Amino acid sequence: MFADIKIEKGVELPKSPMRSEGITRLLRQMEIDDSFLIPADKTDKKRQSSITAQCSQFAKNKAFKFTVRWVEGGYRVWKISRDTTT
Image 1 (cartoon, rainbow, N blue to C red):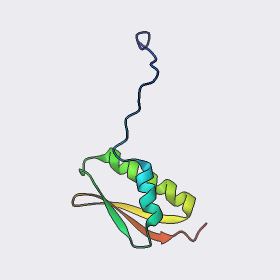
Image 2 (image 1 turned 180 degrees about the horizontal axis):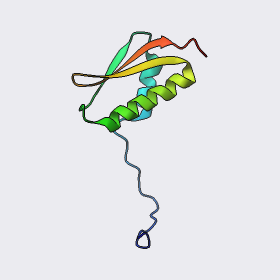
Image 3 (image 1 turned 60 degrees about the vertical axis):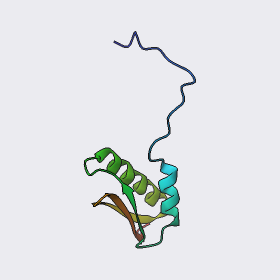
Image 4 (image 1 turned 90 degrees about the vertical axis):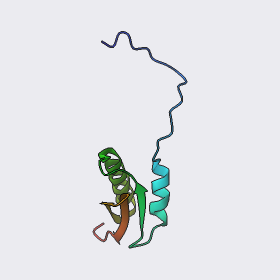
């Protein structure tokens, strides 16, 4: 099955439509109760998973809590508190 697959060099990796640096930059700038909207279709579970994972990773490293909810037009991310358990 894999015998016909060739390894290629120099193929440029396309930019992701939602780069994690962009979300991280936004998360860094947020204060408690701030939010932002990422336009998306409600059926786009892959996007929701990506957003949630990026927020969780950032929150873990920075001791903040975030929540992601579907709202009309996309997924909204809120910075809800500083994690005082760490």
